[in-house]
Amino acid sequence: MAGRDDTENMITRTFRFPEYFDEILKEKAEEQNSSINHIVSELIRRYVEFMRFAQDDPIISLSYTSFGEILEDLSEEQMYSAGYRAGERKPKSALLIRGMVPDFESVEYMLNVVLSEHNGWFKYTSYMDQNYVYLTHMLGEKWSSYLEGYIKSMFKTTLDIEVEVEKLGESLIVRFPER
Image 1: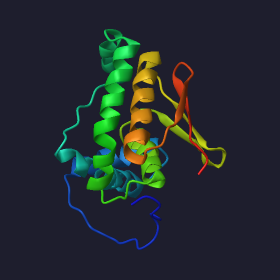
Image 2: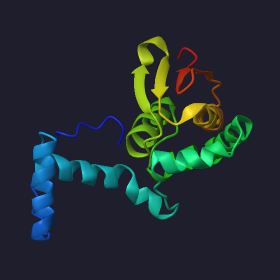
Image 3: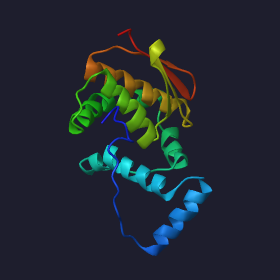
């Protein structure tokens, strides 16, 4: 999945859905200066790359505001610890269930595609030519602590790699050893 060219081997498929779906899609496409095809393709991509794997481990959806209220009652230490535990358990199995070999590229896919694009945990910016990535979010320093724990344990558990995570308020720099 990682690295696939989305433009190769394109097919045409016909779908039937209620007329009001089409009205909403037309309106949204116009607002976004996009096309219905692009919107539907993105929804299908989200299902193929992410949602179909969530059937065994259901996902809840919270607004940033609601989630922020939960974060208020937890300490940074609790958030780091929870992130570390989650990073030990989830990422490697998430790669394996996708049929991906746990290697550096697949873990980077988890960061960029699954956690950033689909989960919305942060905005991902890659500087892999300099051995680091830059992550930004809007959930405060406690969320940064969760991410620090998650990312450190994800790399340690999945690849036996120690990464350096520098927290800068609502952003993190994740530095990798030279490969």
